[in-house]
Image (cartoon, rainbow, N blue to C red; front, side, top):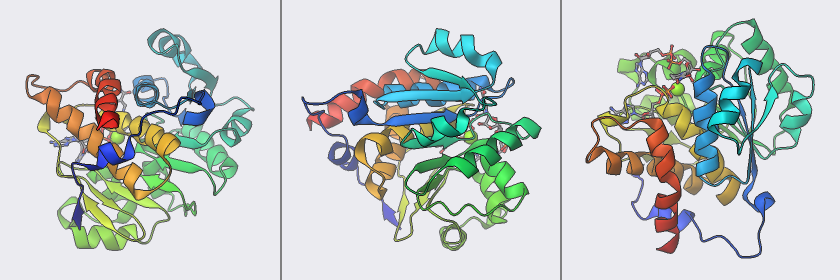
Length: 274
Ligand SMILES: NC(=O)C1=CN([C@@H]2O[C@H](COP(=O)(O)OP(=O)(O)OC[C@H]3O[C@@H](n4cnc5c(N)ncnc54)[C@H](O)[C@@H]3O)[C@@H](O)[C@H]2O)[C@@H](O)CC1
Ligand SMILES: Nc1ncnc2c1ncn2[C@@H]1O[C@H](COP(=O)(O)OP(=O)(O)O)[C@@H](O)[C@H]1O
Ligand SMILES: [Mg+2]
């Protein structure tokens, strides 16, 4: 397993070309946020906007509309049970499926609609409740550009490996059974691509607070949208999330996801100039 190099974010995060527009930096769609977990979709969308995605939309429960618009006017919104969801899905480059989606019948319907609408060219980050639903039903997801982001409990559900059995070797074997890339999140996150595996050397217990993983999905989506779907972008996104948290944790007991999100543009400008 390779350790992610501290020079990687500067290699991946580039200065923006002068001749560019919002379309240059990719279209991201966040699908999640039921009436109980609207904040998860808002944090994922905020992270995508602040990490530089060109256009960000959110498909979420209707009740979250005002909160989303008040908190993040840059994002567009569609109710996740709207009949035009498949058309919206097909118009974007990167989809985040699952933060705060929940596991009830509505969530199941949204999952089914989304998996039927996505194409193999699209990057799909599968997180949170979507992982739990897919694991419960033993669904096979054959998307080559899937990026799975389970925490250890979600990974237990998906892989069948109890948390105590989640060693790098057994994680790699289980990850190879899934299409795409698997990010097994823990205090030292591991990343498994088809060809390689990587260890994130950063991260702090100040990150152990609800919404931190929702935030990672937005950063991943924005990095893939801007810098391409490859191991470098994915590892740089994971590293950036933890690097900013470590900086903030020097003088903050807990790193609040919204605070990490607000720090993204400055961190990225610094890396782009290197
Ligand atoms: N503000 C919000 O709206 C929030 C919504 N959330 C959403 O709530 C839904 C349920 O997710 P949960 O993760 O809470 O529930 P899960 O049922 O998936 O996880 C249950 C528990 O697993 C335990 N656990 C063991 N090892 C862990 C590890 N390494 N990392 C994280 N947890 C570990 C934790 O105690 C956690 O509460 C997801 O859709 C998620 O996106 C959460 O992200 C929390 C914040
Ligand atoms: N003690 C810790 N040390 C390092 N990183 C942590 C620690 N606790 C949590 N994290 C990171 O925070 C994120 C938590 O993700 P997740 O549990 O999905 O959060 P949520 O679903 O509440 O948004 C992961 O990226 C994980 O690696
Ligand atoms: Mg999570």
